[in-house]
Length: 193
Image (cartoon, rainbow, N blue to C red):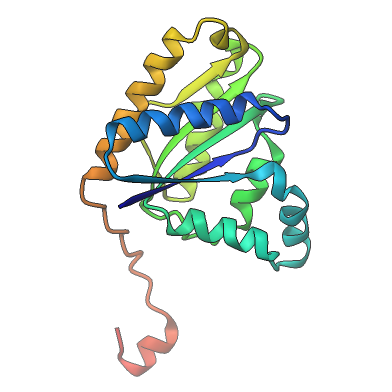
């Protein structure tokens, strides 16, 4: 069974960010048989994420969320847009992950905002974040402005396309992380590899 973690950083309840995350998860589920979806609502972990950043120690609830994301075969990550970028809560969650936690992991990215003008957040904020984390975002990302919810036909089409791409990536064999070629000094001394 393929496991997908869905990280959503919406703050309100109900949240258009969560609605988009659910729409993307449904698109993947319809394209990929035998899939298990596990949702991580960052809104519920905001205080835990902040405490982890201050102390370096996750609470049990945050540890469970981190384990869900790192153990998943793929990740759907959706954030609201604040000040032309991802939310601080969204970024803070990914800051507390181990730097290698997402190596080679397929990611479907999405964002929500009030106007279409913020859609570039996908390519100018989210893709660089996940590239830095060495994850593998699929080609189609989905942005949903407030107007998309009034007549969601085009949004459904984009979500379906992204879901199919993500499902196809999950179905293919994973790409092994590339070794950096770095050899610790101790290994050089002992001749180990």
